[in-house]
Length: 122
Image 1 (cartoon, rainbow, N blue to C red):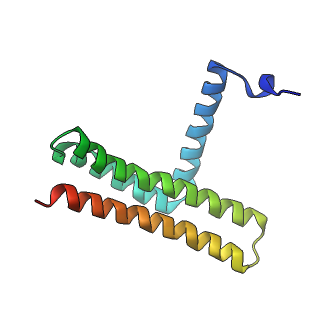
Image 2: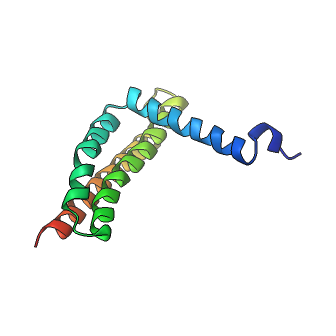
């Protein structure tokens, strides 16, 4: 049976999805120190990116690379939460999943450094 009534459709679905998105952002802010640190970095650097970029493409690259870090951190936090939900015992695959998520965040931060160097270094 189709569950369109339960999930809503049209505008109701969009409103529900938006509420869930805000709840996720709030949960990340409240529970994840790394997300708070990276969000503050974005709050500080995004206006600088808009000011330093000489055209729309440069501003998009500078700002988009910053937002990429937040996106990857949200995904990393969701992986960590799912792994922690499974159980507190140590397991090689759980550790690997968390390490891979952390590596993804590190790569995203590397993208920020690379993009900012390429755009701003004459």
